[in-house]
Structure formats: structure tokens, C-alpha cells
Length: 358
Ligand code: ATP
Ligand code: SF4
Ligand code: MG
Image 1 (tube, protein in one colour):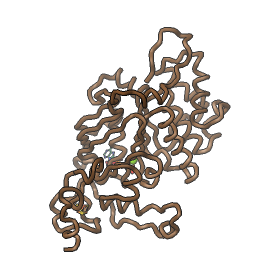
Image 2 (spheres, helix red, strand yellow):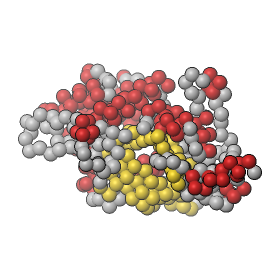
Image 3 (tube, helix red, strand yellow):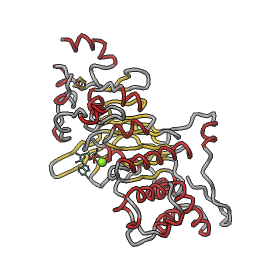
Image 4 (spheres, protein in one colour):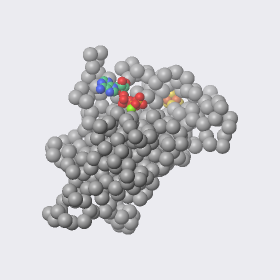
């Protein structure tokens, strides 16, 4: 968040040291708090229920991954966090960013929040950057408009940001086409950091990059979470990416979170059959068998306008019970901090072994 200062010659403020967050005795409010979020789109063919009751929180210093197949509602959810949803969207539920109710705050507060407290990193850096403007000028623009850094301090701040994302300071003079895909994505991250936000929402930030560059950009993002004490919500369809970079993972299916928990637990020991299928679909390092024959998940994600009855995953679920086509299991604690929505898990799953053997 930017601080306002009346002294134009004041030195450029540095981000609050992580130790301030760590040492703080008072429990901090989550940076992002989503409660019962529902989003639907009005279209000529009727309502499309894209997000159907999602709860999610992100704290300072935490990186939360949101995974799920194409069309499950990840970007829809992300767009509502900074009220960027299109005009045909209807939003219900609560969204608080840094303690502010995003759905009701006025435009000037929202503008300040979008740059100073929370920022988005989108996929496709090439299309988001202005091809005829130098990188340094593009990074400087949000600082000039939304930050309190004095004009003469901006070039130093741009150099600092380039350094933070692992780019040499002379790249400020380059045009976007003179940079590689990974470098351009680093520039996008530098722009997101420009006004010192507390929360970053990254929607498929590495999808267009090759595997090596993808790993570098991911470790940059998670390194920044540690270094600056940021909160990060990272969205991708690739569960393996999140398993190695996030502290927690939430898995979405057909507009709902069906499982959430510590990243390594969800990736290595998924409890929901959909998370298990998603996890098995990606090869693991050191497991040549999985590399050459990753398990796939048969069928396609459902059309949100024609959702299956009962558990929406039942037509594809390899362990579905007869009642799964009628019963939509609520999310419940499989173990502490491990909400899962499946009849085989938690309270309903007491008869799991009996049910599976029947
Ligand atoms: P992907 O992994 O492909 O990016 P996603 O999980 O981000 O998918 P969304 O883009 O949120 O999914 O889409 C969720 C559903 O909402 C889809 O059925 C999509 O077609 C629909 N949808 C998204 N945006 C709109 C819109 N502006 N108008 C109507 N329907 C939309
Ligand atoms: Fe499969 Fe039934 Fe669990 Fe749904 S509720 S994931 S269909 S076992
Ligand atoms: Mg998307």
C-alpha cells in the first residue's frame, strides 16, 4: 500500500520488512477473504452459473493456489477480486481485500485498492505491454499515477523493481519485442509490484512459457511472497505447478471448491477423487513411468448450464456410488484444515470402506 507524504524530496519508501509481519503479535486480518461467492453471466442462451458458492482466504506471506480444468470458474473468481468482472456478470457473496468490501466501496477507493493494495498479473505478457513504449516507461506509469513516489525518485524505483524481478536495470530502455517471453512476464510482475501491493492475484502467469522459464517465473513469485510478506493467489490448471510453489491449494470443479489443504498434502495425498485425477494427470519428477504415461481423466468438464444432478463430478468419478447422482455433498472437514466435498470423505465417509466394497 502506498503511503502519502507531503515532502516531495522524501526518500523512496521501502517495503515493510517481513519481520514486521512475522513479529506482529496481533493476528492479522486476511488480505483476501471470499465468502459464499456466486457469479453468473447473463447470456442470450440464459444464465451461466460460473462460480457457485466459494469460500477462500489468503493471508500475508501465504501463497494459495487455485487449480481446476478449463471453464471451472477460476478467472471469473479472479476478476471479481478487483471488481473487474464484465457487465453481464451478477455477483453475490462477500469479497474483502485488505479489509475493504470490494463490492461496495466507491470508485476512488477501488482505484487506490487496485494498484496500492492488490494487483493482478495476467497471462500473455506480449499482448498486455504497449509495443511502442519502452519497458521502463511502462513500469513508471502506474507509479506516476497511483503512487506517492516523487517524480525524481521514479527512475530509481523502476531500477529497483527490475532488480527485484531479476532483470538488469538497462532493460528499462528495451521495447517489449526485444525481450523473451519470460522476461516480458517478469516485466508484468514488476508492474504489479510497482505501487507496493499487499496482495497479488496471478491468473495463469506462466501458461505460455516453456517449462524452464515457467519454473523461474514461479520461483520469482514465491520468492517475492517470502521476501516482501505478500499474499499470492496463483491460478492455474496445472496442479503440479502449485504443489511445488504454494503453501495451500484449493481445487475447483464446476464452479465450486471441492478440496482445500496444504499444497503437498493435496498434491501427494488428494482426498477428493477429482483432485486425485488432476494430480495423477501430471508427471512427477523422478517417476519415469508417470512421465511417459500420466493418467488422464475421461470425459469433459460439464457445461455450467447443464450441470449433472447430485455431485457434479459423478459422471466422471471412478468411485461414484449410486446415490452420488442424487446427493450433492456439502464441503466438510476431512481432517483439520482439510475441507473436502465428497460422500466418501468426512462425516459421510464413516462407511467409506463398506460403501466402496459394496
Ligand atoms: P480457463 O482455464 O479456460 O481459463 P476458467 O476456469 O478460468 O477457464 P472462466 O473463464 O472463469 O473459467 O469461465 C467459467 C465459465 O463462465 C465458462 O463456462 C465460460 O464460458 C463462462 N464465461 C466466462 N466469461 C464469460 C462471459 N463474459 N460471458 C458469458 N460467459 C462467460
Ligand atoms: Fe465421486 Fe460421489 Fe465423491 Fe462425487 S460424491 S466425488 S461422485 S464419490
Ligand atoms: Mg481462466
